[in-house]
Amino acid sequence: MTATPDIGMVVVQPTAFCNIACTYCYLPDRSNKHVIAQSTVTRLFEQIFASGWSCPEITVIWHAGEPLVVPVSFYREAFATIERMRPASVHVKHSFQTNGTLIDTEWCDLFKEWGVGVGVSLDGPRELHDLHRKSRSGKGTFDKTIAGIRSLRENNVDFHVISVLSHTSLDQPAELLDFYLTEGIDQICFNVEESEGDHVSSLFHGPELRKRYAAFLRSFWHLARRSGRVRFVREIDLALPRLFRPEGVPARNIQVEPLAMLNVDSHGNVSSFSPELLGLKNKDYRDYLLGNINFQSLQEIRDTCLASALYRDITAGVQACSRSCDYFSVCGGGAPVNKLFENGSFTGTETSYCTLTQMVPTDLILEAYDRLAHSPAMVVPQDVPSPSPVQSSDVAA
Ligand code: SF4
Image (tube, rainbow, N blue to C red; front, top):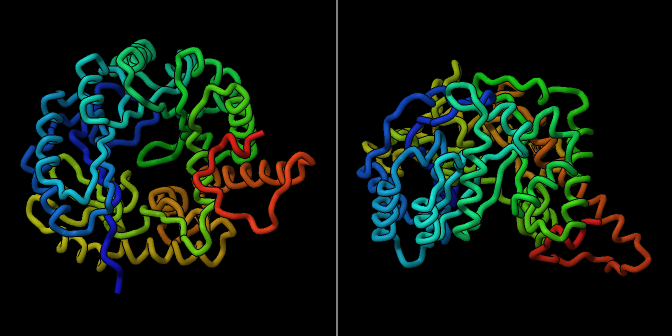
């Protein structure tokens, strides 16, 4: 019997439309201006709250296309509706992943009023950012994105950036750090340009990638630590508690649990597992959809999920990982969408993506911890307790 889901993350696509056209974008429907109906948002959260399956804290990520092309008034209404329905025992945290080009004071007021988490896609200084992040007419978007970031800072809105690393930026950890510090950016996440959907990355499958990325991340982490001005490097700071955790507590991977991650498109179609699966198609699994929240209950959607080839194959992939991979205890079986795009199947194991997101950070943390353990100034206990919460500053050299 499969346990009932602990819904921890809901990814809602308010619209598939995006106002810009990055060269590495994998979204097939990014010119479609349809916007999710308020009634669909209401029905979705009615179902989630009535199911009793929600975690004590649910993160709602408004993402994919560009969520800020939908007016502020839409979110005010949606947030208020969700708040009215929310059981007292459940905390809801809203979050946006945006290209930043539309951020102004009105958006900042919304972010502050509702405590919204904001992630801005920014690939670094102008020459790196404008390489791929282009307007629909092919011009660079750096000026608009940086204006949005400056507006966030002027209005005291907490935010992080996500930078996609390319061939060029992988060689420039110091330059990237200088840029972030100059712009007052102190929470940073990295993605390496991936192959997803129709987009094929030449970088991702290169033989030197693991070595180059490890060198980049090691250097960036240590320089950031030395600067004393960076609060968060996602690749390290999220890996630390997965690595150093209390005995017997498994590292959760919500991308492989049915409905733990609920992904809903602007028409109410529901998928689970990796959010990137929403909107994609494949000859074996067709469209990865498990139902539509406007017409089906979450219970029905869950039943469909449990009976699906998608779930069967993702589970087989996790089991294969558990048998073969030394990193399984921190990873939990990886990202299904990357297994599919890199290996052609959910049932496989290692991918370039898991090498970069799981193996390299784990190796770097253990390397730093090992150095610390052998430092004459440091006495390390034989039985390492669970030093939680661990900060990257505790182990970075
Ligand atoms: S690191 Fe890769 S191979 Fe290892 S468990 Fe994760 S997905 Fe599987």
